[in-house]
Image (tube, rainbow, N blue to C red; front, side, top):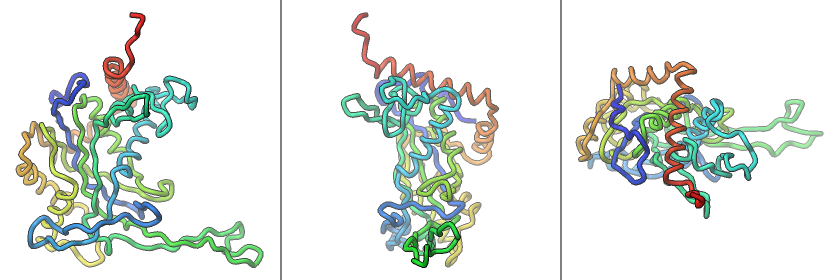
Length: 329
């Protein structure tokens, strides 16, 4: 099980060097849209991490905001459902917390993921994420679809006038893999489990999330350390090298999910050894599965208690380090 004694009992005012990392493979389970300005985001980078595999390839990119925003919104939804977040839409209400509009500065979401409200102050996020890169190349990981918007009678013409509402969009194929690492710094055990729970519950990413964008987050490791570990790009490139060495890549065929998970579990200890940080715990394999099953198996009362604990720790931090002191005292 996870070593909860590693975490702070209270959120500190200054960085203390306690890093908890969630290592995962984000795998699409439907046609997803990770795009800006109407087309998929992509970049040219080295295929692998060795000299032999250094030739550039085009990879689809999943920007950090496209990862963290759905997870934050899922967490806020849960807090709101269990009475730990205001439901007020009145921006003048001091307790109201409206995403991208107004921050209450004291809920578990604001304190954990940070906020910035101009002259009203700011709080740096304690959850770090960066752009993720597709394991396979752009050519084999995307597909273009032609989309239309029919009229009431189901045709593409209205009173004999053809519709111009026909468009094409570039989608990410199902079973495309995005290796990813989320880093949290100086959290309590309850707030770390809040972040982890958001990752486990979130299944829709990217555009048109009501009609597509299903992604499954397969967590392959949790690492507690005194510093940050390897990047998403290096993780992706090392996985690519291992799978290439074992002749796993096949033209126009997805990488088998279990094969990718096994390769990730194999490469994580190697990458950690090269990072030069002191690992307090590396939770992988059966021990990780048992811990995650415990989290998934929380009943409603246990979940409500965990969210209440996380919210109280955030509120305590707000009272000590964010709230303005009462001048009357």
